[in-house]
Length: 295
Ligand SMILES: [Zn+2]
Image (cartoon, rainbow, N blue to C red; front, side):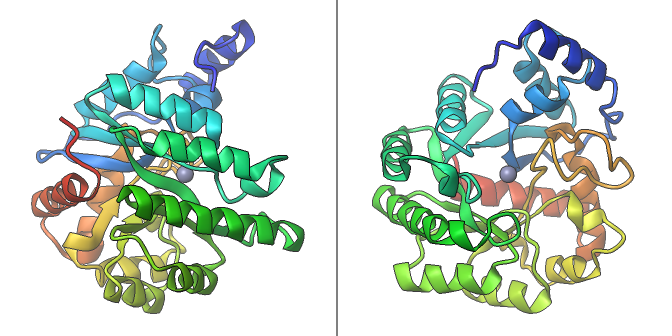
């Protein structure tokens, strides 16, 4: 993805930059953002405070909030390559690479794109395959065979390289488990933006998967999600932004960024009845175990 904004995009960024929420109180114990899209954030929303290097500014803003490490997630070949290059030169960033489940069915040559993802997957600071998975909300019947083919291919690549699998699951819980069972799951599986109920969470926990909770856990309507978070053991719990999307309450409608992780992790501490600092330490340790080391 092109990181040199055109004049019009620059102007748009400057305009939208003012919409970023104010920074929250920093965390005492650092934590990491398990799922962010820096490229899309810069493209869609610009950067808090503007500046010449918007990606660096987002990473610096996150560090000031106590979010000192990030996982940059790919959604197509271009964004995966961009993330891999950023991770290769930035000590706070690791990358994951994939074709998004809504992207895969639109590609003219899916298998060629999968070969490019596999090449990137070999790089040392690419530490996962994702986001891949199934989405029956945005992809209709016609695209589902290609979507599942792509998901299966990402699982196989994750296993070949011994790297975690980061799953996007939208309205497809049972099918995600069916495909994982038929392929055999990689050692580390992360359900990004976990969206199931307590029963599905319990099944994922039983299988040893990690559940990554986003700003959605703060939404008033998210009772089931909070129940899911409450039963997730700390060693299987992650926190993420999915920035620029899924901005937590009370900032909904404004762009999200990793510096807002404290809002979501404080909500998780409350929901799970755990001490905030202990929870942050556990999440950090999970990150180093599953994706790390960063440095
Ligand atoms: Zn995402």
